[in-house]
Image (cartoon, rainbow, N blue to C red):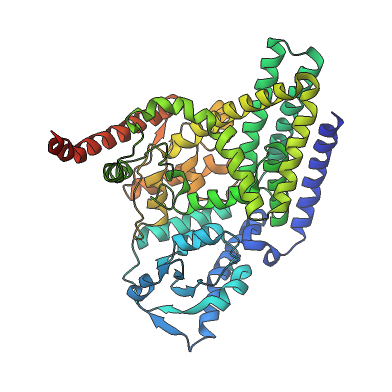
Length: 498
């Protein structure tokens, strides 16, 4: 048990040291530019302007580069031939095999304007110049692809305002308390079981405490994954691996690969991993029709018209079955040995201590129950923000704001809702500003709402109970659409047989 006390003190010390190290490090040394969040606001705004003009100098120094039309850019939109545009500059990233955000995100924006998503995740452009220079091939010569320019300008002004108000600056106190309260709940789970035994009351209390620790760690590792805690990116990566690995038994690289695809193209069919769940569920209005056509053609089908009911069975199995298998498989297959080491320590810790009181099979049983409840918690929170919104094919003409608002809704603010959802009840603000520390999301909400009103963009906020119910009604609607389309397609076949 001393491990938890020593670990908590180590966390506090590392947080303190990490802050001082980050403060002494120049922003240009921060990988992917995430260091902007802890600098003084005036410096941030000034550096943002410098960042945007920095690569323009690169263009002036490469006057022999070609000029391309949007029509030509759009032709380079495959995995083996991918161009993308950032601030009217064309980059051939076909051979970029070591992109920190992964290859798939580059594929998602191949042949498109990636300016807004690029600045959402790379505020310090001066650092990534060294990567971009070798891929820069020319400029776009026309503005026919530029849509919603007034909204884009207003949103950029809002982002600069958030920077000047220090909303990208994290609270060390908030994240220390968040980390410690997770460690306290996990320690309490072991303490209750070892001190009071395995009768049903201590067992249930242990279960409750462990589920809380695991679920809350899910929100904290999300903070580290978005690089929104430390100025120094290396510290964020370290604590991301530590939290998702040692406390949750998962792979940080797997999470990055899946989660940033979701942020880059939320609710976009065949691009957002959260929509690629057709073996079990159909989302939106388009996927059910497509699935019905495939089912009618090949004669195999799932009873999707019952998906709103078997959701209660499948959702609890997400973590004990899918999460555990996929995260370990990813880490081993991709040779992410640091991830393998951290998650191995999680299983060593759990299956060394718990069998002392429950036996080996009793520990497996408890672990499965914890995973089931934790998974249900996660699914209900995450899906209430997205599954009820529009699920559609990619539309490169949509601006960053419109794309995020089309796919995202909020849950009403309250002290409990903020804690239960890890402040991701402000999902709209999180998607617009993915690197903003979660404790500041509510502060930018009024201005985001004003922006939406100005451009007549629906801004959806729901009570938590209504948001949970809407998951089921949305699944029922999609399942009904599938059944109607499937029966209509199969009707000629039945008539022919008769």
